[in-house]
Image (cartoon, rainbow, N blue to C red):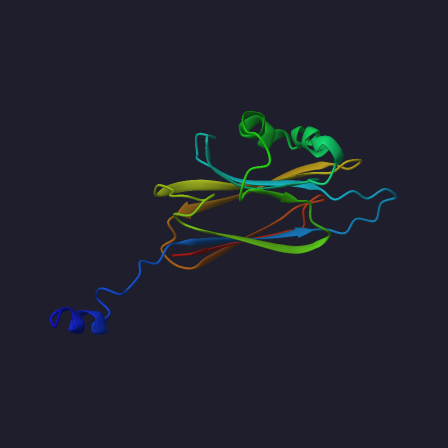
Length: 170
């Protein structure tokens, strides 16, 4: 025990391993239209071969009677083809309610669900939005994992999505 005390005090045994982080800011724009509906939004990570590495978030109308909100998930066409038709919603830690216009932040830590462990390499963050009586939009942000240094990548949607910011921390 006497030998462990100096090691614990020095921090050699007590230092936790730090995990990489991914933070995403998504702007849902306020649209000036007669009939406004909040957009459904899906966020996932793809590998260069278009296979899915992680399904991070799906915002949809969770309050509709008889799970009616799930039938509109297929309007997010790319997400639906890659992930949606093969999963049962709600997905713990992934699905949640639609968001009002404004800036929304979501973050993920390496090793924890839904991000999990990504192998080192090139990836694409995909953000897709679809809105009833509105349009569809898919924005892609390429990135390298794991990040060697803190990095911020920015993108902007044209109509259904506003400003997007991907922040990576080693």
